[in-house]
Image: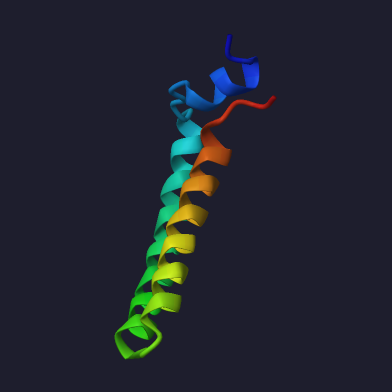
Length: 73
């Protein structure tokens, strides 16, 4: 049987009103950084490293949003 921690990780978690505002602010800031990241990516010859940076950026935004919507443990 799945532990409470595992169940919590896969449940749907909707943000409250304040959480929605925080996510909007976070996404606006992330878009600014994404523009800068893509500008670097267009110039670099280190494609592998850039793709890793791109993936880590996506992970960063995902985890930040998750930290907003998850209820406290």
